[in-house]
Image (cartoon, rainbow, N blue to C red):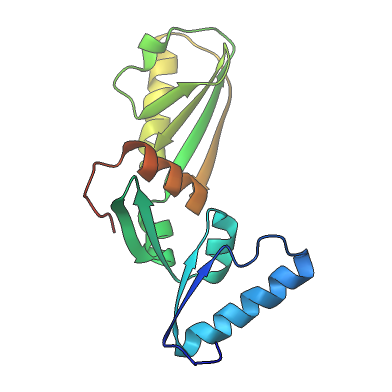
Length: 162
């Protein structure tokens, strides 16, 4: 920083610091970012969310995301429905529905962009098959960690996502 560079490249700048030092370094990075380009590399995604306003995600050498943090979080927002039934059912019952995973014998997790539509489908299915719903809970939003996992597990090579 003595030479007042236009671009600063920081690789894991908060590693090994105590919580007070992390807060101080975050503020220094934010202030530097007002007048300079700061490239911040980290696998600690909470740090990225706390410091960065633009995010680039690279998977196996391929760019899979390049967007502002707000756009990335907004565009990839998902809803999760957690369904608990009184009965044990076959996974085939939920065939053709949005992403579904069995949590245990009677509990299922669905990930969808249309929570209301999926909730109606689940209720209709439960009525049709005479199933007893113990609970049906919604969780919305997305974290950078969830987006990172989604993009690095399923993203096609050489395709940037906004």
